[in-house]
Image 1 (cartoon, rainbow, N blue to C red):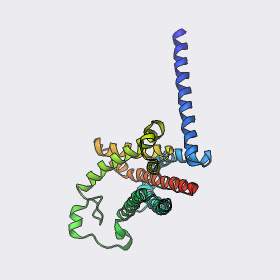
Image 2: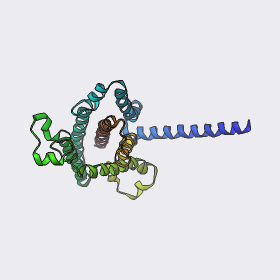
Image 3: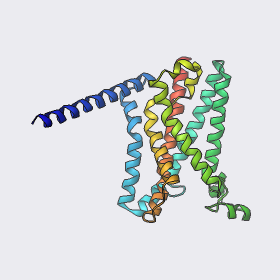
Image 4: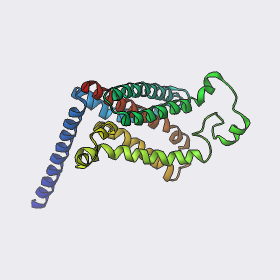
Length: 257
């Protein structure tokens, strides 16, 4: 009986610590955003909802799964929408940063904006599927999907996968390290413009975990199609993360102004 009571006490202590951590996490997130608690919690759980709906569509029907994850279908269209919205917001942040007399961080956001523009171009193969031109012979031999883009070229694709793993790990750890260590005391205040809000850690955790799995671990023969196409769901979560990051920084800029 005494042993059972001790185990219950340990579980109760762990539960209280867990609840205390979540309370502190949401409190810190609310302090960051200056938005409603409902909004912050919605941002926190959104990637789990996207993951759930992606898996559910595959379990319900293969054609439904293709509709969600196929080329130029629902998932990819939403990606482009949020990447484009993130690009627009990044330009607004740049304008605000220049008005604050912060050209260094503005230049960094300009690099991000250029990256988003290139990303959007690559996602639509620079308009090939829209305007219907044929892939050149040289590009066809180098490109896994026989399209006019660079991210599906043999060799480059592997490098980009490892780069995405590093970026995902960095983005995942950056906010908690900045918030819960004393590193902020040893770096310039302007560095805060590069820090994502805490509630985006779930997005970057999903992105990093999936990219690590797809790049490092062996690919199973069973469910190969489903696993391969699920990358569109993960890329949608990344697009949402970039959009919310830019929305957060734009909102900070407006409050400061």
